[in-house]
Length: 145
Image (cartoon, rainbow, N blue to C red):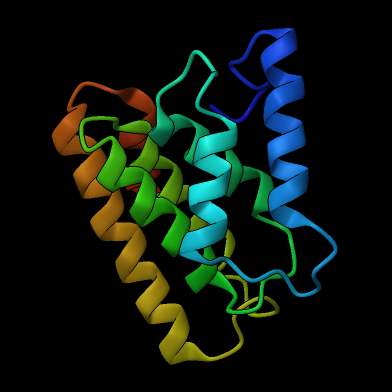
């Protein structure tokens, strides 16, 4: 799931260009519906569903300085889930992303960390509802135990 992009070489160039355009030179990076719509338009020729392209974008932005922190990634995952509600990889990635934000240096406020953990728990439950036999989803679920 987090290895090389599941795209052909030429598609990786298109995806990379669209991701670079999405990121731009903003620091910290803001995520808006307009930027997401432009990214979806720029990646519409790829041989992956919109939800998968957005999931890959969220993974790429995981360690980027974001204007609203984890809320920016959540926004991307929400749009991805809306565009592909039957894709279990989207909520699974969202749950994994949440675990990365639970470090005290990344999310020092305990109340925010609890909210992020709850979001991850809900996401992995959605992933398991879509893919009940997926061992990777079960492994991620165990991380929340």
